[in-house]
Image 1 (cartoon, one colour):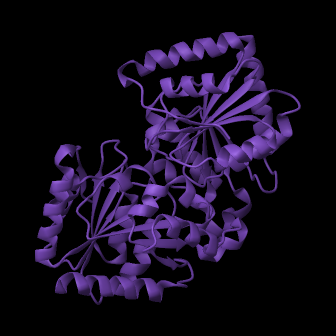
Image 2 (cartoon, helix red, strand yellow):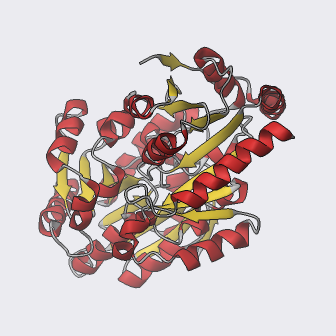
Length: 220
Length: 220
């Protein structure tokens, strides 16, 4: 498994770098998704199932950003996606320059969907534009339905909220209704998909959204 | 509920500031614990139960650090501890200067045990000495037993590892044995307490450790 050690790029120009990367990805027809969540919310497990279901319909690549280890990249590679592991040198987020370096090291020619699995964290990743076309966050039901109150920026910045681990939500008194109400107060346009990567419940809706987003990205 | 808005202090001198704060706390007989975990790992629920059990035996205060909201401080205040909410201005960690400001705003005269509930995050909080006498981290079983591989610094830095939500671990294929083995590779001296804040399982051992640590802090 290839591991890339990255250093933070100059952040003053991050917004400009991000916009430039987004335009290049648009020209190449590659939708980059910035996938953000807490540690253990189920980012990798969601990707494994999604790749299994969709890899016959599109070319998928995953940029796994972690402080350390390469366990996640190995898992998504096994599921059938091109994958590269990126180490952030202790940093709690990815910026546009780091994302570009990772994508270019991996190679994304012919890739329809590239997923940046960001560092597990609900704070710093929300603050940096990576150049992604869409931002997707996962909140797992064990984290609690009051999470939007504590980490508002992440909910404000995300296009999509995946509520994961719905198969165990009764053990955590998690209310999808309350959670969505709190998220919509911060971001009225947020789209949400409750699902379970274990049972597959809710995956049809999520994967339909994903396929439509890839199509739309290529056509605009 | 009092809310304090904090700004980052000069980090060049953070280690020195932290050491000075630790010595002052030692003189006053206040053990400060830096409690760190991911969002939703159960920091506040652990504190509620611990305060309920121990508040007749010692004076407890809690500094709740969050990016936003004051829901956690309200919960621990209801459980019977002195509590103050601290906002970090979007930052993902607390440093020694911020901790001192929070403690002084709250007042900690006569407090035996002060808990800094750090921002929910497994990366940044591990990098900053806050002046605490002991560092305690929580890993909840839904986060997975491979978390030590991904966030090694947090495990290296902590004196105590609480493995929370043991009542649901069978749903997440979480192995306490594997998790502890991985944590001990990073930090052979780490002490661990598997427990459930819902059922109370494992609390006797954790609370015994806490009472002993408070006693020891006063006697040295």
